[in-house]
Image (cartoon, rainbow, N blue to C red; front, side, top):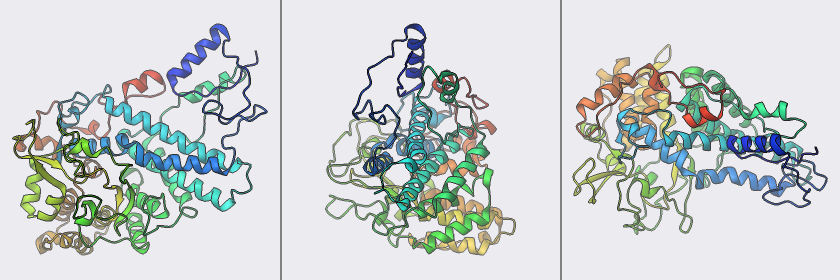
Length: 510
């Protein structure tokens, strides 16, 4: 049997291909001699070619960037649901079976949000791998060696971003850095198992992220003050600061090092906090893009707008668009109280807004709060910003073997001063435990509705302490189903993935 090669889209389709082949050998097709959506990657001689020329490479690299612009569900919408509504910052916002479990801690492997995220993350990894694996074999002299190295570096940064989000959700996940071959009658026994990878340990995932980022920095594009949409050296440095704060690679000196390198790259706190998420005076466009603080952002413009805005509140350039149903990630009473205790009026008004609604799931309909950091279809989504990294540096100064509480306090005070808040007291500055609490509070208020709170609690082993007590003091929160414990630090592996891949194992506690 002369079986041609066929690309598989998912494990389910793969199984269908195998069954068809074993039962009837019906996959024989006439060779095709032109590129198309079906035959892309096969030349006239029937040989596999991933990218025909430089234009194909550039097109595929743009596809990676388009994931930030076009596929907001897994890297933004669900990220905020988990980061804020699964913590004490927000309620789920709706009573949907896929959303509510993040508020009341009833998550299990059947959750469709987690299944969507896993599937899309792995698709993103596959797209990055294709460029990384095949770019050096592109037969086009117009694609220079410098360009090859740069494009590969950008893809490695993208892959590291994806795996960082995955490992913090699930811990042990498959690390895939190759492209699975097409199955033929000749290689089926060799290739078939590669479609069902085993999980790597959490440590191994972090090591791959570190490797990708360190390899990418020399060849990635430099930070551009006029374009913060690129997978730049600075994005890699920001990610390195973040991964070195996590337990598997924890190295507080490196957190400080990469935070300082970002400062050397020109990053600083934007003088006016309202520039980060605001709109212009006419409410027709974002107030400012590419701020001094933004490290990586997705940008949206009129005619190519950001649909995610109507998942959280109103689209201010189309005020009544999709505002007839309850929105995700409703600000919690506990968070609102935290803003009030600090007298933090500027960040509160930039983070929370009140509208009249037709529903009253959590608050009276005539005075209902909404997340306000995405307020129109033309606002940017900021994936990484310097305030996060600067506060991680303060965390490292507090938590390292020889704490430097004064320098940490100076950083926290800098963040507070921008929004008109006073300096930390001398009593707080002189006590490590008090400084850590001050740091967590500052991160909570500064980064509210940016998907950080759950990961802050997780990173510093505060999940049980904070989350098991919030239900009693927050009268609006749905009744807790299961207590948070040592197994709560990982999400369940989606059951649909376990069913497809027998080499995956469920996380303990689910």
